Length: 484
Image (cartoon, rainbow, N blue to C red; front, side, top):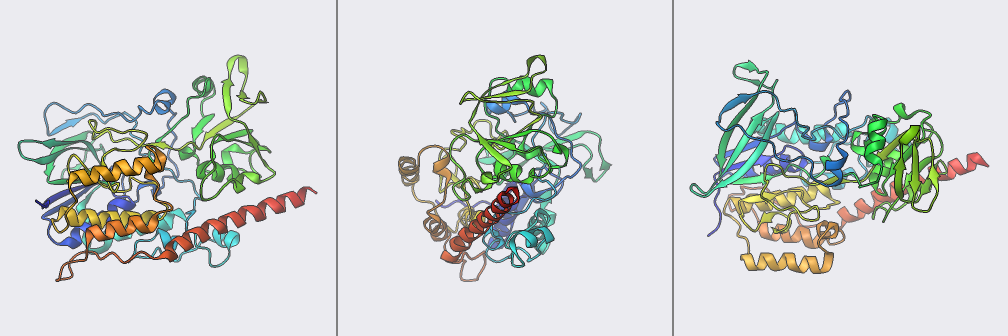
């Protein structure tokens, strides 16, 4: 029997949650669509808080991937409680100069283009047709999608889903919700958290994967951070180069955040900036950002010494970096789902998700954004429309055996870790799988239509990467020429 949900909850109002609202509402069959967003506005990782204070890293929990655990729930609900003091990792990722690193046209949803608003900085670096957008443009774009047709009225902000449990007696999902202290309600602002429950037929998990920093297990790192408060940060906490003026900085990581951080510190931090690299460089950008003469690539760290006033980084090749002021970790994130504590997370992914979306245990539990995408917002859209059709009973999943075979075959070819989640290079295959599952809107035209895959998206995606590579090469050559 096809699923026919009437009440659907969406967890998160970032880029995947926002398009999920549109996809569900356009189906025209759901009695209730409710969105719970724990931040104060829509936008997910694109929400900026310039004056937000960084919370010290819990290195033990972050390195063991045990941070962001479920918190206790009041025994009787509804209830008011003192504000939760546990760090929930809703802190912003955004520093003032952050821009997209992907062409805006391929980031956009299929019907709604990201506005052609170009910053002076991006035009100077990439030319008047720069395809990259400032973070404020992207956050506003997500917000605008919700504003259309009164979707904002479906969203409850400052509200965290603390638990999602399937009730076997009613076959419904019971969500335990917490509205943070200070959020306005009918009685005005409260100085306590308010807890209550609501029930739904289906849950769309659009809460994102990039909240909880991953910190590698480096001997001496915890002690260094304790002895020198503020000296160890994750790239998520980076707020621009000003505070590092004249400081000796070591960045750790080989991918996008480490590269962008190192480059942004040029001409501000002490030269050279030391870039500690282990493993492979980013598949799209390579190592070009690290080739600047003011950036010195070094071997992985073996340990960090901080006793008796030392600030020394020992490297695996036997060399040292002494008098280090700051370590910035561009080492990625751990995916956490504290509201689904019984759900397995293995190798930083959730097993049992057919097409990375539909959980084998319950087709009414769907995930958006649980991939290493590339064409990010478009992937979210295709997933959202397919999920909306299935939840509406207009599309039917294949038998469970078939879904399990899909995962088993993918593990054989991609592995059971990060590779499993990568859509690249099979973009067309994945998009068309989702489009075929979703099908076309009904004869009445109700529902969001997915266009056929276009190779131009991948071509523009790649062209954007080449444009950034050219930028780094120009800067590297200019810097080398200035030293002659």
